[in-house]
Image 1 (cartoon, rainbow, N blue to C red):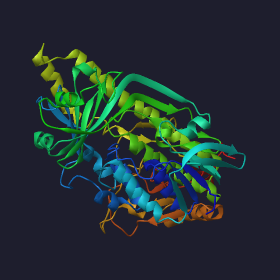
Image 2: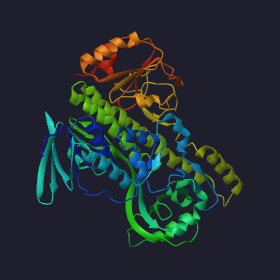
Image 3: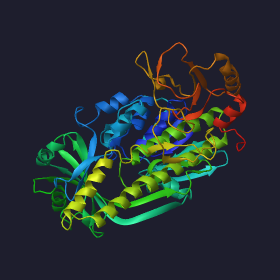
Image 4: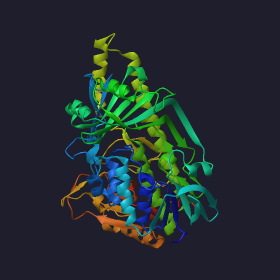
Length: 530
């Protein structure tokens, strides 16, 4: 088996596997090193958003993902937030993702991360362009002038793989990040959190009234704004539980059953299956790229599992970086394209952490410090009702990552990249392209290609000819889709929309203008490129 690859990936968790699929499907030769023979059976990273399921569509695994779920399909995917304890009577719907479903081409899903990884690993086995070395651990790496190399160990054996680029998808304690000398900014909340998996059919009976929910947050005043939260793993049987615990807690000196019962608000029988710990902190790498080395997923960023941002952020990293690496390897993408990965994804993560996760903690802390049903029930219930009215959509309507400030997007003057946006069917440069329904039951997103796609909605056909010629000469993959003869249900607000390979809008307008400049810009060969 050859040791020469286009791209090396350290780590075949969900992000590494997703990146390998994205690259492998494009014909890129990929070598992946993964220390675990099997995915660890820890039920984390369960929530997969509509955007993530669009990635699964692109990677050819959507059907397999839905078949791998451990909860019946007729059970709702929602969540709730409760005050004091789960059964206190004070609760409201929280983070209802169905509210933004029309803006995406797939329903969201929930399944344990080990099932997600299993499905992705099976997809990798079908790709001849990808080699995965299971049971091998990355020990060292080198960034050469003309490539990168990775040395891995398995027992007493070592092997060195060589490639043109190397991506660290090896978790929060990334060997790649540390060895490459990439620092990280850390916001440590100084909280030790426990992750407990427990089995309890009796608990399932207690929550039957929440049948349309699969995760439950408990806001207890003693935790000063930090959540205790539950989630379902296996239908009627097993559940996970996260909660703050004293700093000196270990598996033997703490009564986890009592803590769980306190969070629920009643006594019930349960058996512990797993106890682990994690530090409540937010970290982000100082850069996502250093020469030929890149970071993605938890190697680049980590934060508390509040709102299901973690695994979904990692998958977006993979989709964003994958097509850009493939473009450069194919010869039509410029260095600015690779630099834009950091400029887009790191800035979005910083906004996610600041404007959503940190905000949740700050707002919850302010609430529990200001209102107490024991001392002023009327004031508490008024304030709680106000939270309930806003709770169903919290973080949903405004969480719409966008790249308006990107160097490879023809965006608005003064546009800034951020996790904050609005869901709108207008095609806006830097924003995710929403689907419009077509008469045959498909959507406009079904017509997107693996390269750039120019959607022609009412513009004269001759407007696109120059762009097609320039793209062909430059080797840029471009597909023109003319909807003149089809009924499109809706309006993008523009006659022409140029979509990137990852489904984001690169440009939108009525007439192309300087087509050569536009293609140079979106291909990373603009003024700041080589």
